[in-house]
Length: 458
Image (cartoon, rainbow, N blue to C red; front, side, top):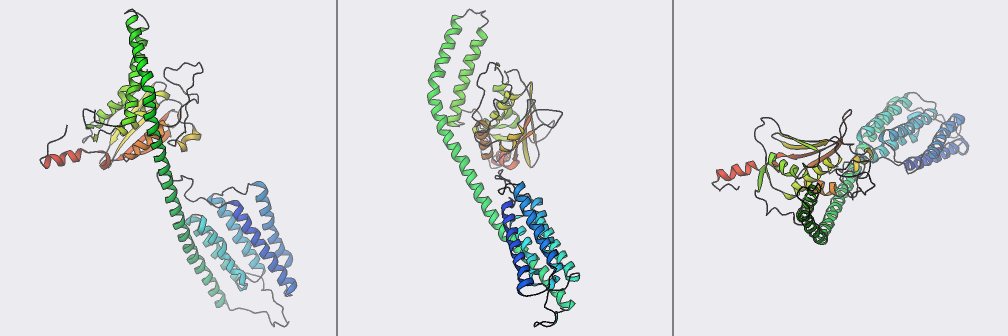
C-alpha cells in the first residue's frame, strides 16, 4: 500500500496471531483425543493407542511451550506461521498413518491448515503448504497401518478399499485443497484490499486535518509574533545608530535585524502561500534551486548545487510557494545538521525529475527512519549540531512539524520522498524528491502556447 502505506500500517500480510493458532490447535487436540477414546473404548476398534496418544501429546507439549515462551498477542511472521501450520499437517499425517490412511474419513482435515494459510498468509506460503498437504495425503494413501475395525465382529470383515478408489479420494482432496485455498485467499485478499484502502483514506484525512489545523496556527502565530518582531527590528536599528561605526557589535546587530525580517517574511509566506508577489511565474530548475538555497548560504555551511553537465531540456517549473517551502525546509534541516557541507543534486530524464539533498551530519536516528514525515516526530535535541548554538543547555527541541508540512506540500505537487542515511564509511542523511516529469515540467505547455499563437508568459 503506498503513500507510504506500504505498511502504514505494517506489513502487506499482517500475519496470524500466535494466540489464534494455539487456540485452534487446542481445539484439534481435543477433537483428536475424543476421536481416539471413542473409537478405542466405545466402538471397540483396535487402535495403536499408545502411539496415537503420543502424537497428540506432542502437539499439546508444543502448545504449552509456545504459550510459556511467547505472549499470545504476538503476530507471527509468514515463515513462523508456515512452520507451525506445516507441523499441523505432518501431525495429522502421522495420525492418519496409524489409523488407516486415506480410508480414514478424517483425512479431509488436511484442508484446515491450508485454508487458515489462505486467509492470512501470502500466496507463496499457501502454495507450499498445499503441496505439503497433497504430498502427505499421497504418502499415507500408499503407506499406512490398517483401518481400525472390529474384525470378525458384528461389523464383519475389515474393509479393503480398492487402490483406484483411494486414488480418487486423494485426487478429490488435492483438488479441494487447490480450489478452496484459492477461493479463500481471493476472498481474504479482497477484504485486505478494502481494509487497506480505508486505512489509507483515514491516514490522508488525518494528515489533511493536521495541515488545516496548522494553517490556523500559522495565522495566529503571524498575528501574535508580528508586533514583537517589529519591536526587535526597531530596537536593532536604534542600537545600530547608537553604536560607533567601528564597533565590533555592528555586525551582530545587523544580523539580528536581518533575521527578524526573515522571520516576518517566513510568517507571511506560511499564512498566505501566495505567489502573487513573485516576479516570475515559471523558472528553470536551476533558478528554482538557487531561490531555495539563497537564504541558507551565510551560516558557515558550504552548499553545493550540482546540475547534469550538458543535459538538454532543462525542466521549467511553475513557481509554487508550497514547493518552494517544502524544498526550503529540507535544505534548512540539512544545513542545521551538517558539519561542513550540504550537497544538492538535480537530475532529470524524459520520465522523471529528481532532487536529492545530502548532508554530512549524524544522519537520521535508525529508530525514526520509518516514521519520518509523520507529525510530531523529531530528532532535534538528539546530540545534534545546530548552527549558531552554544552548548549552554539551550532548548533545541522541535515540534516535529517541519518535515511533516514539507512532505505534505511536496506530495501535493505529485512528488514522492525518500529518507535514508548515507552508507558507511560516509555519514549523514539524504532526502530524495522525485516527480514524474509530466507533473512538474511545464515547458511543453509554453511550446504549445507558442504554436497556438498565444503570447508567452514571462
